[in-house]
Length: 613
Image 1 (tube, helix red, strand yellow):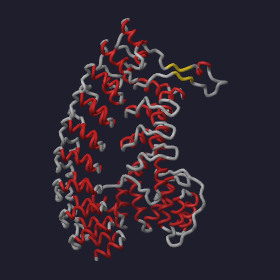
Image 2: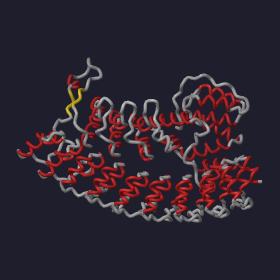
Image 3: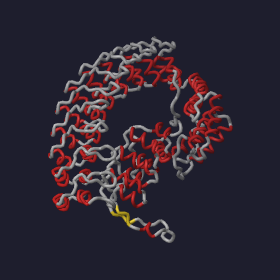
Image 4: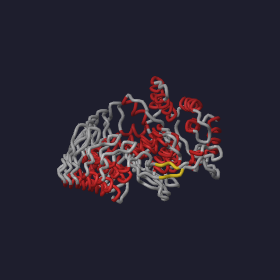
């Protein structure tokens, strides 16, 4: 399965002379897929390889026609045999990633694509690797179409398409109703889609125009696992839509008992919801009865859920057990924290409530308060002697959990109470790494002020400065450099902070690192310098900045490529001109005997060829 975009009626675009594919592409841009299919079918029948390729892509995506992978593959083979490099690459991707991968066929078609001049195929052949995804970019050139395809793929749990289309701008893009891809995946209970979206930074608390969060949709869906997935990711159980409905209300109104129990176990405030039968005439009368979320709760747990503490005080005075639990295993203390009832928290602790007793998922009261952002309840815990550094083997330190939620006020509370700013431990990511990776400049400053080590590294050898540089977080980079972070600390691939910033085109960060003494000649394990990485990425502003700092122009990487060859491969005329002006050699060749002009010519960059010759 590849792409899918909801069709919409529109006027057929006017025929454009010149490129025979333009009428089809114009129809695709306005989502008139029926029109596009007609044009491409006609071109395909007349032997037009480009038309066969695009028609195959539409059959694979199910755009304007039923999904038909077999038909798509046949069209790709016809186009590839006629010399279409994209079709040969598509076949390589299909054979490499199918349910039963055929690696020999994948390598054969990848080699054909490379012979026909496809740059991605040539790069993969050099690395002896296979493509891991199909490329929809020839079909979906319009950003709105790509976003629509992403939302539909999320609802279909089409992970392959999501991986292809997802980037940092689209991951939280919202549709006309304010719903993101995560909303669509949650509503459909699409677990694979949810997992990749969360891993790529989807906003777990994103709200649509009605205040609806992904958790509300997931817990109202048929799949309990979808609700559980978002709860594991610490979605807020207290968020309410514009009508005041929480995720628990969504679950109860649809009789999602398992989801409701999970929400209550996660600290959702109990509610009383009347559940109407779907078919009153045929339904059992009991189905219409109210669902009581307090059923089976001890009185002290009910009292702990209230902001007003008179009832709780009275129960404790009469000898109620401060460690009593709900049927879901939540202690009264955890219930009070979820309700953000600081007086109840203090009363329970003073009466002997066990502050280390975790819920069934292994989360202690301190961690629950941090993850839910219950600042008043957290203050009560800390004021009553709870150690800010205490955590079970299954938990992250509270400070790291606060950084992960991005709550600077909670971070400050914990640091003020004596939390270890480094929070080290086996398998634990240092808080400064987590904050830098999320570009949280204010939290980074708090951690540094509290004495955090400025150059911690994660399991991949990436430092806080490395992550901030890669993200282009200039303010975080400045704070880390001022604190004495190691400017040359490279990851396991030999990529320094400067190299990563250059590869991603962050000119302001490159400038700051260069002025701080970062080496312009540092090489990755593949032999690439920051200048080569910037040139390969087509980042002319970074290329100019590095050249202004006297970066060497004619160094060669492990494959023999120079910055000029790499810039020529990327088609970046500005970088090529800047390198030539700095004296880069046109004559140097890589191990394949390819010079800069050869690389540009192979990719039909005629303007570059003229400049290089």
